[in-house]
Amino acid sequence: MGISLGDVSGIGPEVTAAALALPRVRRALVPVVFGDGPTLERFPVFRRYARATPETLAPVTGPTLCAVTALAEKDRRPGKPSRAGGRAQYAYVTAAIEAARAGLVEALCTAPVSKEQISRAGIPFMGHTEVLAEAFGVEVLMLMDGPRVRVALATNHVPISALPRLLTVDKLAEQLALLSRELKPVVGRRPRIAVLGLNPHAGEGGLLGREEVEIITPAIRKARAARVDAHGPLPADGLFARPGDIPYDAVLAMYHDQGLIPAKALDFERTVNVTLGLPVPRTSPDHGTAYALAGTGKASCVPMVEALLKAAALARARRAPAG
Image 1 (tube, helix red, strand yellow):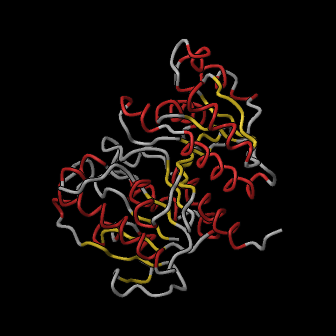
Image 2 (tube, rainbow, N blue to C red):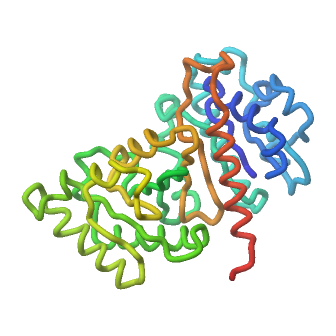
């Protein structure tokens, strides 16, 4: 599994090290960690790993540390992000992606990065999901996969003002088909999918907006004609009001906060960010760089553990023979 270290000044290095030190994680996967050599050397768990660089990385037989950078000490201080660190965290992601494209890793797990710091370093960056979609040339879907609810996002990191023009009948129908196809092996049948409205009360039949009438409902009909078990549009506040009694396997939300607020509120530590539609599974913990916690030893590694185990499980499922 390719693991990108995230921002070296954030909690990525310490939660990755703590997670990979756990026996149940070591049994589940063979890690290939893409990061900063001097930063990783601070943690005992990595001192036993084989060494490589992106140029020398070959098919691995055991835990491997792939040193993408060797940052100066001033650029890898916990809680003190730098421009060099911004460039570095992007380099870890791209190195892991290239390893996946070359068939050297079967899955990807990405520690948290800072969009702000990467952008300050002069690299246009909206998020992992967008970079992965472009790198592999595929349409993808972000899924927040938690123990109580799975929430996919029809749009990702875009302004609210852009939503009406980004939501189209064909796009939503394609996303519903992708969500159904990717979740079918996980749930063992065609998944039952709830589709949220964009406007309050799912538009009240057009009184509070026309998107439900003109876009979302026709998209659901088109998806159902293609044998997708989709239902809606449904008001978000009503659906998430009883999280223990949601009669759906997944929910398609129309925009970022509509989906992520309930997903994080319901089970923050155990919710995993999964990118659907890629040729290899990709997961990430559902939190940021947490600069205030970096280097204090107080950051929980539970989200990283969940992300690593989810990626490993998805990779095993892909290797399993059909039927």
